[in-house]
Length: 496
Image (cartoon, rainbow, N blue to C red; front, side):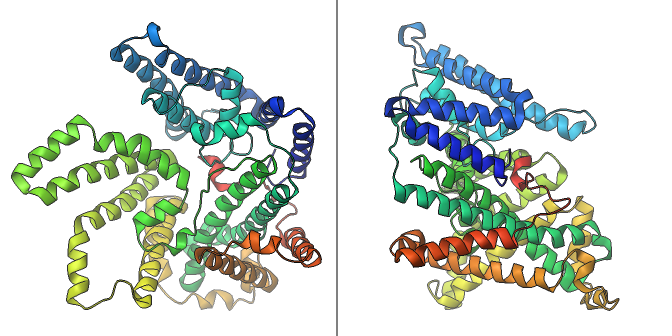
């Protein structure tokens, strides 16, 4: 059941009706039934995997916090290690088999990465005594399987989401309308922008050996926007759906293409994934005994500044290795991870030298010009070059694409009279795409400046407010990409 299908919205409406008709104390049960039903409809054959992982995490946490049953730390560590091996092992096995033997008809459970990370975060938080273990297995299953976030995130934390799921919420008109607004905005991002750009991008990349200059550059640029709008659109649909029930999922994107460094970019893009790797991978690595010993040794031989970098660089290396493996097991993703992590590591090492260079050149770090330069530089380093590497069918093809971007103007490709039609577009496609992207840019600028757009809309007079709602609805219906061969189920990040 796709987030963009009519069946999904009927499902949400029926689930919301059941939720608000039940007594407050048992409204969580309606969410559980809806979540299991949703997952069964999406991937019935792999429902046992979801249930088994939830059971392993739940009972593992109970053992770790079981008091007298496990009084000493070694036994707690053994339980933790066993649970982590099972959870990580399932995810790693599926990804490796898909890479090594793609001919094997192995089913990739829908949402496997997202609910596996939820389970891992929960069991580690329990082990670190950040909060008490949940005593009700069905409530824990609801946390893991809550249907708005199960397919593509955001990745939840139990202490932030659990109580919202279990306490029950009353119907509030304002909150429901805010949720519907966010759903419509997500559909606009996905169907009007991402899927329209995808037509051109697919046509160019599928024939990359014959594409040059402006055409190739446009496809690369459009792919960066397509990927962002596809993923952000899905997350906004998920967050809007949850908001109808009174539940606030975490923000997963915060205008990442306005970042001024690669490190900042990854704190704005897929925020919950970055936070997961930072808190559950990077932090343990940076404070581990081995890294501390290494830092102490480096301090003696290289000095205080070098020692200071040991923990941060160790964390960056491990985090980006894990991030690359999560996104894909091919050489493309390994190079992608080395590129992203390498730039961040280089920036850490060169931080003081950068400051000295700016001072020597009398560059004001707070000037508007330098700020725009940083945004453009980061967009190129984090949003363009790495996307070529992962979108190309191979590493060799990625180098060909980069070469073709600057080989010639590419204007001769339109001399055959086909124009945009050879890429599945028309002038109307281009006009709609450019207009939609400009609207998205305006919204992003307003959000970056701290303007609360939905609150501003809610403060308008009722006729004007509903006019805006209808305009957004009609823009999705009239300008969204549908028709023969179109598959709205194919969200890009569903593959991870």
